[in-house]
Length: 396
Ligand code: SF4
Image (cartoon, rainbow, N blue to C red; front, side, top):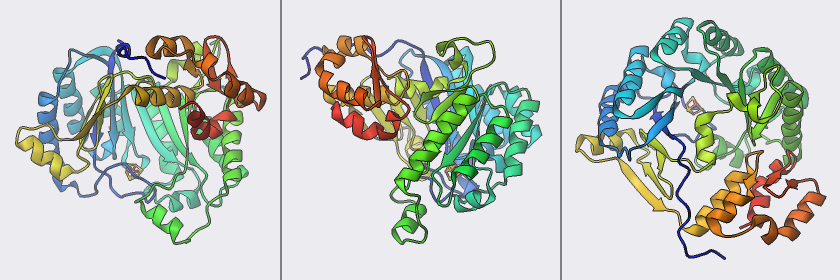
């Protein structure tokens, strides 16, 4: 199926820089991101992070995004965060107009902090709200109230942030359409520039997954979750948020005419993950991508510190994507974006015309209104996004 010639070089767009801060005040039972709650390792983690910045390959890359995520970066002192941003700027070639995002937990921020973040060079804030409903917050084990979340958004706005993203979760047991709409309405009323709506997932190894297996609660049926997704897509579209990825919506401001230019507020950093743009990841569990090679760090603060103290990069593994894996990822990542698969680029990279090769499958999916295809593009409809995994599997 695949030609022997090597695939074309990755996009020469600027790269992305990700820094993982592996500390939280408390672990949420649904979360499978790596973090610990013991703050005593923070000073040694910070020394190790500085060593990693020095040691990691720079590849001559220029970066136009810096994303500080976690974990809960906002548990660090403001001055420490500023120091990290300054050091990153000294070690990496980061463009002056880079999108610089900080993830914050509403239970850990104040107006003063928001102002300090702004002064430290952060220009995008991503706030993990998840829900404004008290019961949902309890189920998700969040440390904050709905009022904390509203305050966090207002303080970010007061501090001068003009690019604010909110994360919400749907599919929570007991969540009705009415309750979900209430969350969406509250979020939209706060006028964020970006909204991420994630389906609650039960990741193996998490306490919530264990509770599910022990039947301590009844999960929402799949059909109900699909309906909540459809509610989000239609409500957000009515309120001028453009869906650009399965879970992500960017606000389209008044006067902006076409969908492409509406993507001013799409997450520039996250789009690198979906478009095969190289990125460097620092910190425990962080991943890096160099065109065809992917590397990842140890998901352990102790091991991370140990390796860097010995002058070694804290690499846990790496893989070189073969052509088949590249094809699979290009299909999957293309289909999760509303712009879909670029047929020309696929042909250039793999020597295969996607539309021609899968004409029968595409025709069938079009008939069911799950896909829309043109000469240049093949994209899922918002209904088709519900079946992303199974549809992507048809092209692999
Ligand atoms: S605060 Fe965020 S990173 Fe920390 S455990 Fe909760 S969801 Fe995970």
